[in-house]
Image 1 (cartoon, one colour):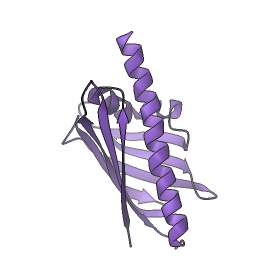
Image 2 (cartoon, one colour; image 1 turned 90 degrees about the horizontal axis):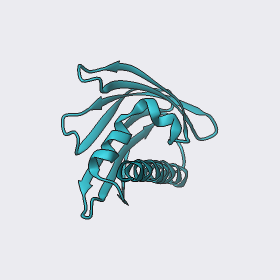
Image 3 (tube, one colour; image 1 turned 135 degrees about the horizontal axis):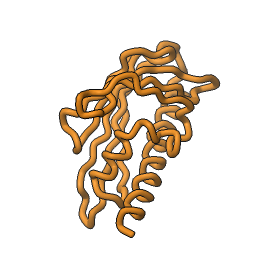
Image 4 (cartoon, one colour; image 1 turned 90 degrees about the vertical axis):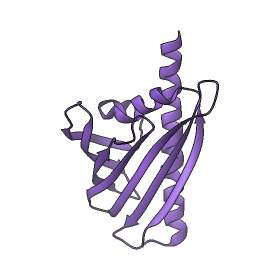
Length: 152
């Protein structure tokens, strides 16, 4: 059974900056601390990553998974579906970037998780919460840094 979770955060950067940060997989090592390896497997004709392999710090061990990205709603949204994974059978999600006034962005992070191994519900909820909050806080820090560098 899969769990659907989402979380929102206001980022003091324009939506395009947030989109640019999330879609720049080659720079994830600079701002996404739980991701230990990122390999872009394929790109579309515009140079955007369409398939990306990840190795992430997991619950007591590394988690390997491959995500296929969809840019049909870009730059307002980037979504993905898992095509392969060792601990997860589903790790689908999206970042949605909505202008929220004063050049800020409301970022909504949506995630659908289905594990291959059973875990107690409270452990699973805690892990999902950590994934969401860490991803959003790290994105916020990176995007606000980029926006500050751009406006200087």
